[in-house]
Length: 359
Image 1 (cartoon, one colour):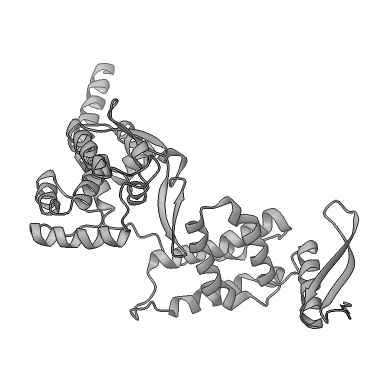
Image 2 (cartoon, rainbow, N blue to C red):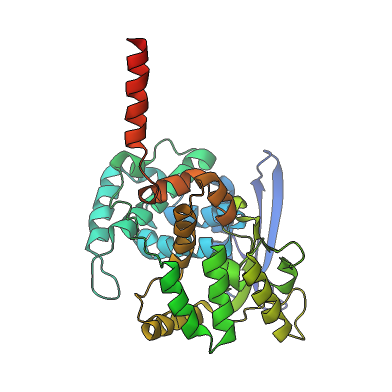
């Protein structure tokens, strides 16, 4: 690979020909490199990307994976994937050729990952092990779909770890009332928790709310965005899923309270966040309020579980609840099945009657 020096300013450049994705010959010129080596390395990387076959180093493939996948994902989703790739996958596979990674290599990698510990010195959780393996498998699947890899060695080996369903906890209305009474000394906290408990919205959805999202005439709030703190900046993204875009009816008392709250922000615009606080602030307030009220400390997300549990207790069916909280009805049925009254006795009695009728 040839590199050339620009005698006028002392920098280096490369100029070469390559075949593009249409099979046509193209010429490439790239200037401004400080050293000859940098110029040559850039040319080598460029040609490897254009060639993009399964003989490329795994590290190069990971870079292509980012270019292919990142534009389709929410930034916080990509950052999670990126952390796993950089800290759990590339250190083991970066210099191997993509096509040379075998099932045995994956088994060896799994055994090494199982030895790792977290910041507390404990073994990685079963759920996290499963997530790490799924990311490696996703990389190979992408290589199969796009770059012609023949086999996914991670799928051949099978997963490590297992899905861990987090314990679901919730507050009864009585418990929440005790808690909310303790929050009344800080209006922003009180009204934030009122929205979380009585509407069942997610934490990020709450923090993205603006005055323009409320229609007090029709007593609704529209959920169409989510708040994230990324790279030290406030970022507003689309909500978690397409199903999460929804309009929620608010009870009368909550409508009145939110009107009262929004009038406190006399200078707030239609698109300004009405809860200009952080997730860590809410977590701190959750601890403060639960201790003061003498109720068990639950997670912020458990307020969403509390809302769903309350609606189930009131006899509402999964489809109606799912529409309200932005879930699929099958998810409600599966995750909250233990809260629904059993129909087993009713079912067998019906079957008995059918059989008697036939006899």
